[in-house]
Image 1: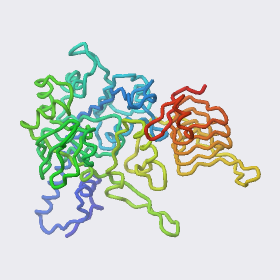
Image 2: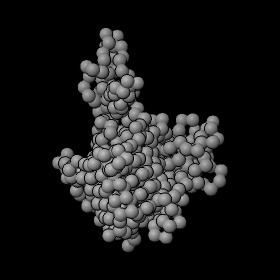
Image 3: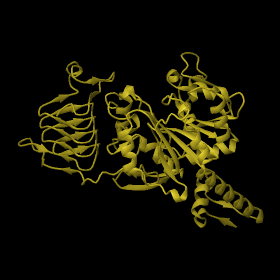
Image 4: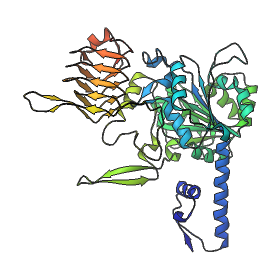
Length: 471
């Protein structure tokens, strides 16, 4: 006898897809017991996920993102036309069925709070689901949050009140798609006290990251916080390291004991090195383990497009820390083009956000003849709702309510809400914050020396125009 997943319930089909068991033989009653065990394990995993509490770190100043963080917290910085950075982490939570979430803001948090209240008021407390915004309350001391570990220590009462089996610590300003339920299963299968999500990178960037020393079974034996020399490399590959993504999964008792017994403020620098000798600490290799099942389009030679379900979508291994203006610009450019490095158009792993009630984007004028040339179009770009384009936009990310007037060109740029680009403007490799009316015939991104007199210019040459500079 053979049973296909088509005859199983959605939960068992998902479990079989995760473990790549599309069709399996059942030759005796023992096989049914095995199936029953699988389904029981799936129920256990689902129950533990529902009893996991997530903390999202949202308190960083984001000084390297100035002037974008002049009036907003880093997780509230716009991304991808219609999103905020924190939407990526929150969407991962929802798509992973992780519904107990506490956001820990600190600096300039009003914009972030407004966004969360407007777009993320979707939780049903009757089912035990919640999203809480918890700024520093000085319950333990008179200090603000002093570090990642201290921010959770100051909110131990919330952990004890919720009484979760596990606590997940996440960052609110990274770009990635991650199935946290797979992370939890891995953690349980290893019998770990603490699991750390790690990214495989070249060792030349080790000085910027927390680096784990692992054995062949991914048991962590050491942890270096931003080592300046001699970073621990991957066994068998002296050119690669495993770098922390700032994603931690603790057994609750392990976390509480550590926070109460170790009077230090940071996980990477203080808590994790202390736990390694006495606890079961494991590495979760993100590129190998993370799998986002989603649909992708194949374009045939004749132009026909066919939808295909991928068990591991191409952007399952994508992760970006947008800690600098250049990294932020790069991540936005990764969204453009025919086959973007990070795909916003998947169906199975949607990115949720507050949807501004705006009309569809509009493109006006269509005279492409040399005599009387006047055309509005966008090529290899993302254009937000409410925008009116009567100039030319290429390889750019355009947010809500943007007006690009006639004969203007915008190339390789990120433009945020409520910006008017005047007639005959030329803009290239720029980040333009909201509430700007750029005068006609302006040029931005073509003369670095001139741009530096007025704006921030990054090492890569990206020009950053602050909020409200052009009134």
